Image: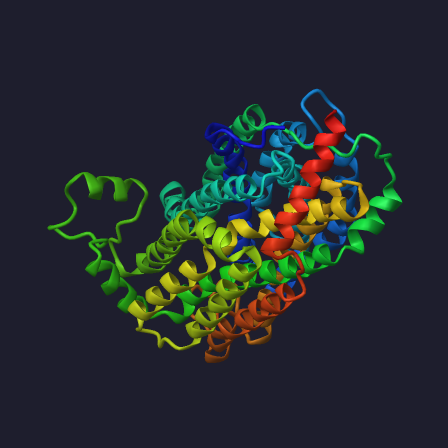
Length: 494
């Protein structure tokens, strides 16, 4: 069996993660703020909306894994689901960020809950088989790491687009009407997602199948996956990483709006040439920046543009970190050791966001650079390691249930996303954050924002580091395991 994958197939597969992250990054960074500032929901209510969907996920995600493992088509088990779910996924994405103009807050909360649950269910039916597809494209360790590295180059591009351009595009399309601006921006992103999903379906191929003698047995799939120690470690690791990412991502928009001194931020943007003056409004560069509404014309523009520039810098650093460091470090030191060191450094730099005072803009950007660089190598490794876990279940039990294995981790991801946003909303509400008070909050609320942007997520990252010490698949173990599995598959082909 040829395990080498052509670059065009890797790139085509990666576009599926571009599509998914145009949705995921929006939920991670802006969903809570959209609920509080556009829907006008209290932080605790908004957090509850995010939590309710997790109860639904507890039933939907395992079901998706079971269904996709039993799917049989001429396109494979997992690949067709990327096509079948592309339209509903994009439609529910638009609905989740559409303001229906309801005035009754109870009904607003109901609409938010239903639309969010639909979106999360569509995410499961799309992203679980998409992630599992990456685990059956090849059994070669280096090729699998390469696939996930290119995949997460794509996700970083989507991160750059969403985190960097959302607020400027909302302002540009809205012309003072934020609800309309959000609708147009999400509609644009959803259209791009649909095109990317189609390309992924056309490009990717499945090459690894369950052992031919394997009989379908749901109880065995559940038992063998849940009792697998590497799977348990990855489940808890994924849960805490995405709780942390969602909490920090949600909190930083509040941090820039309500903690950072807007005058100091405006002066910082001026030093970057991002403030409209008679000397910098001309030229191709200024025209492009203006097209994306990234030129500040007044001090009140500082938040949206400053936060966007902050996010774009982080995405660029992460992009080069994935490209230049992830494969190199994983191949030299192994995925586990690389993950432990990089995640520990990420926790330290996250905690340091408590240090800057309101005017220390340069320090905030330096910390963003360091945090993004430290975290970058871990981005593709998570999913490559989950692919290794699926192999470990097969290695130990002579049975393969890739979809179910990935569905559990996707549930952990979504649970982390919801819990992180919910915890952020609950903490902000408990510290007195008032929805709709744009940039004007009490000292207590500001302190809550600082804690949720630094110390609290840093502690949760630390939990993730501890989880990695329980993950037993080292570099040498993985090489031996893959050699054994390759020999079994070759025997089965004869």
